[in-house]
Length: 177
Image 1 (cartoon, one colour):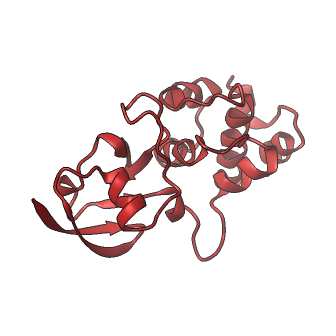
Image 2 (cartoon, one colour; image 1 turned 120 degrees about the horizontal axis):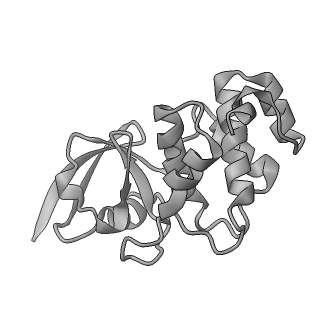
């Protein structure tokens, strides 16, 4: 059985006709060509397929798109705006936080949700928030540093951002740790 779905993905209205059992991950990748969201464990354990639904992280491998009509879906492709990378994407690139890059899309969208809720999270906050996103390459330090850098830049905290970009601690946020 197929259904016609009207989805709002990355700010665009998209209509698809898909089997009702297809997951959001499959529809994004196979029907909409948005391959930035990755297949991971397909059991909801690795976080690689994380996307945002109305700003909340969800595991697209466990979500049916028939439940999402009229809701805003954001994938990693939707983070960049007007040809400019999101500050998280810039920080990940600048600090080498993406090793093989497979887990990176899920981590980026999850981190965006965190920074939208809390513009000045502590390192512990970031680590706890991203605990559902597994990375087998980095050991997480570069990822945490990149989220810190992006948060500082998004707050306009030039001193903290400069210190983080230079690889040293500093700024008011660091004092909270």
